[in-house]
Figure 1 (cartoon, rainbow, N blue to C red):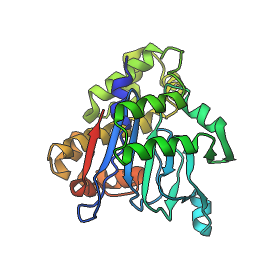
Figure 2 (cartoon, rainbow, N blue to C red):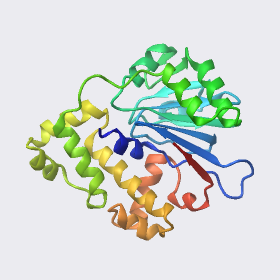
Figure 3 (cartoon, rainbow, N blue to C red):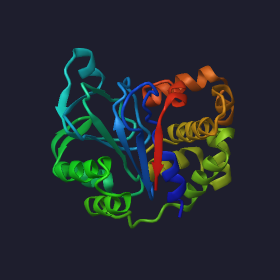
Figure 4 (cartoon, rainbow, N blue to C red):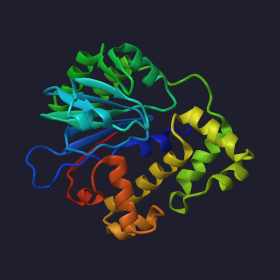
Length: 274
C-alpha cells in the first residue's frame, strides 16, 4: 500500500527555537496521518498540502484567512479543520498546540467537517469531538498516556480508510514523485509514464489526493530537502537534494508553505514517535 510513502510526506516541520524553554515538540505518525504537539511558532499565513485539524490544548487561539487578517478580525476557537491548500493564519496562540494532519485517502476530512458546529467558507470550527480530542492529546502531551493507547483512541474518533481503491495510474505517479523527489518530474513525463493525457492525470490526481499535482510535487521536494537537513546537510546542499535552484529558492518556497524559514530547522528540538 502506498500509504507509508504518503505518511512520510505529511509530517510538517514544526520546531521550537533552541533558546526557548520547555519540552521538545513531538511528531507522531501512523498510516497516512501525523500529529504535531508542541508550541505555536507565530507562523505567517501559509497553505498546507493536506487537510489539518488545529487544536489549542491549553487555551483558545485565533484563526483568520487573509481578508480577516487584514481587517484585524480573527475567530477564536479551540478546534478548527482547515482544508488542503487553504491560506490561513493563527494568532494569539497560548500554550501548546496540536496539528493533526489527515489522511488524504480517508474520510477523515468529510467526517470532521460534518461534525463542526461552526462551519465557515474557508474552515470548520468547534468540532463535536473537540473535548475528546483535547483530552486524549493532552494526556499524551503530559506523558499520562503512551502513543499506542493514544493512537487507538484517535482511531475511534476518525473514520477508517476509504474503501475505494486508489487509481493505479495515480499510485504509479505518486511512487515516481517520491522515488525521484530531487528530479522534480514534469507533468508531461509523469503522464507519458502512466499512459494518460496531462489534463486527465491532473484531474485524477486531484480527485484522489485532494491536492493539485504541482503542489504535491513541491511538498515531496520539501520533504526530501528537510530529510537532508535532518541528516546534517547545509541549507544549500538540502536545497539541491530537493531539486531547488538555490537555497534562496528553497527558503522562499518553504516560507510560503510553512510560514517560517527553513533555517529554523537547524535550531529545532523535536522527537519523533511511531
